[in-house]
Amino acid sequence: MCIAGLALAATATATAPAHAALPTPISAATARSYLAGMTATAETHGDSYDRDLFPTWITISGTCDTREWILKRDGAGVTTNSACTATSGTWTSAYDNVVTTNPSTFDIDHLVPLSEAWASGAWAWTTTRRRTFANDVNDPQLIAVSASSNRSKGDRDPAEWLPQTSYRCTYARAWVQVKHDYALTVDSTEKNTLTTILNAC
Image (cartoon, rainbow, N blue to C red; front, side, top):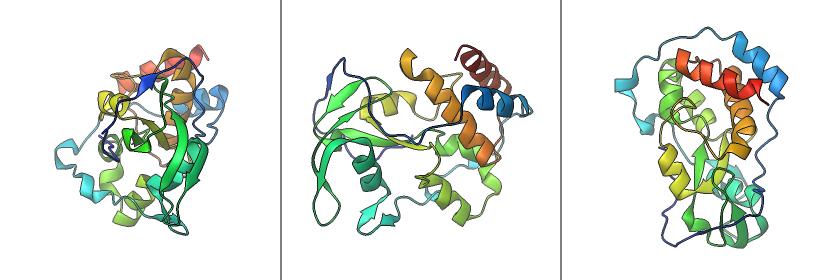
């Protein structure tokens, strides 16, 4: 599970649309094309996964590490101090529409979980490559979401867990893009679920 920060304060649900600024993923048509070209492959090496093999967080810009950079990107009206720590703002979780003004209640989720990446091919990567993956702010791979939704998701792929219905098309497009860009594999149930979602986008 990708957990960044402790959920120390309660958050409340709201009806406002999510405004997390995940980098716009590829179109549904492109995602369908990429996915069709991926051969369903069983996951391997799952028993040897260790989160420490994916170093987080690194400095992205100035004094901002990956978590702080994503919180600043994904929030509305965010202000930070000299250490790049968010001191105010509003965050809406795209996974479940939870809203907070306390960033410590939000996690930075790896959309494609680290353990999923490991079992899909990252076991063969160098540490440098895994560090890049774990801190990628350019692909649609990192997003600030409620701690509760992140922990509900855990290490599950789309065949096992999905965000709220309104976000599933974006989620599937982003998932396929990340897997494609990093040459990661998909298993059969994962591919079938993604195909069903993307066909309805």
